[in-house]
Structure formats: structure tokens, C-alpha cells
Length: 351
Ligand SMILES: [Zn+2]
Image (cartoon, rainbow, N blue to C red):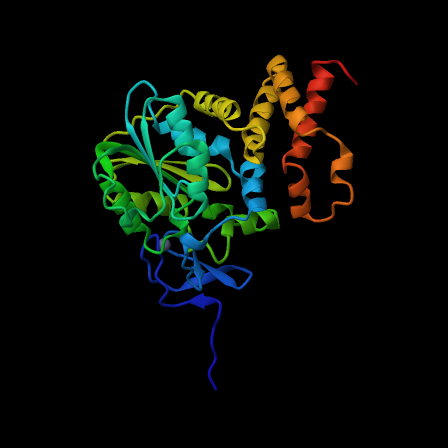
């Protein structure tokens, strides 16, 4: 008779620190077990996942959801604006650029040159719509991308999908100038605690997609091992944001909202209103203006949005499925209604 202890992982190396010590199970999500590294406190997923980005396409409904409400533009652009100096020229590389909103933000608001790497097919959809250059491949399969060339290399929510993160970081480093800055975001292992909402936990763990979730200390050690002597780790409850360089860091901490607002305004101005993609930046700009109390600007934009998407409850009559809702009106439709109410009450004095 053989007894097997299933709550301890043996011989499973930690992708973050390489630690081989026995790892107690921390949480099980769907069919995946996340073990806690006793050396760096990162979470290691078993079985190990391997991604095939080229097949990672989004349906039209998923794409609209991502652009209209799912993607955190403000987080994405805020991190980029912290590293990109608008007062000089430079070269910006976005590895795993997704739809390309980060590339668009830099190219439309600064004099920097941009290049994106995105093997998933929706990268090409974004490239056409946003008029930004995106290579439909992995970075190691793009030999014409010049090494030692980029002043900022950004890679958001990619690291946790990679089986050898140290090698990945060293690869990113090869494309940086000597004093260039790398900007990384990745889920925060410290968020995985009892008491958090199950939806937020599942989104952060993403079982089947994420190879590991790193702790703040594990991430800093990993980045230093990849040859970056200067590292700063910021955090939100769910995410870690790392800025790293071989030279002392030069970050813009004075505020990054200028790039967010300017990029949204450019998208609202240049995208065709008839395209459902337009509604994503328009809704976010409406929220920015409404929350800032800039009601005259907000009211003008609201008029344009409502001309495209009237707040007519008849448009969602007999809608039961989530995807059906998104096919009839934008996923941000309820949010548009919320801001319309705020603007009508506080600006138009309609109660
Ligand atoms: Zn570890």
C-alpha cells in the first residue's frame, strides 16, 4: 500500500527564485493547484501551463467587452507615462502589446517611435484600427527588431505566462539602451487571500493561463538577477508594477494623467463613431470629465455618445444572455447611463 501526500509539491522548481524546497499547497482553483514557495512566497501553478498565443483570438463580443469595459486603460497608460519622458525623443517597445492602446498612447502624445510585439491575432486588428506597428510574432522570432535600441521596453501582464521568467527578462534587457527602462506589470501573489471576492481571485490566479504569481520580493530579486541594478516595485492590491534599469531610474512621478486624457481624446476624435471600439475610449473620457466636474465638456461628449447609443430600455428588451446584451448595446451602456444621470443632475439641473 502506498500513501501519497497531495498537499506538498516535491521537485517543482519555483520559476521566480528557482527554489526546489517542498511547497505546501496554498489554493486549488478549478483543476489547478497553486503551491507557495517557502523561499520567495510566490505561487507556483501545477500542472504547468503552456500558452499558444497565436490561437488566443478574441471573439467579437469578447473584443468589445475588453475595449469597452474590461481593459484598464488608466493603469496601462499611467505606468507607461511614468517611464516615457515626453520632453525628449525616444524609442518604445511594447512586448505583448495586445490591441495596441499603449503604443497609440505614446505615439499620439509624444514624439517617440513605437513598435509592438503581439502574436495573438487581435494585435493586427488593433494595429489597423489604431494605425500602430505591431509584429504578429514572438520577440525571439523577430530578428529585425534592433537590440540595444529601445529607451523603454514595456510588457504588461506577460511575465506570469512565461515558464522561464529570468530568461524572458534577460531577453527584454537585450533590446534596451544602456540606460533604458523596463516597465513590467504582473499579478500580485499577496492578493491571494481568504476574504477576497472569488471573481477577483479567479481573475488574478487565471488557472490554466498563469504559470506563477510572484511576490513583490520575488519579483525584485528576479529582476536584479536579470542584470538590472536599479529596481522599484509599486503595487496595487492586485498588481505589481516594476520599473528597472541598469542606470539610476528616471521616472516621472509628477503625474501621468496628461497622457491618459490626451490619448483618449485622440481616439475619440480619430476612430469612426460607427465602430463599437469607439465607445470604449469615449466612455472612459466621459467618466474622466464627469468625475473631474468638467461638466460642460462631459455634456458635449455625452450628446455625441447618446446620438450613437440612445439610453432606450427598449433596445435591451428580452435580453437574457451576457453576450446578447453586448451585441445590442455597448457593455459600458449602464456606465454611460450613470454618468448621464450625474451630468443631468449637477449640470443641467434636471432631477
Ligand atoms: Zn520562489
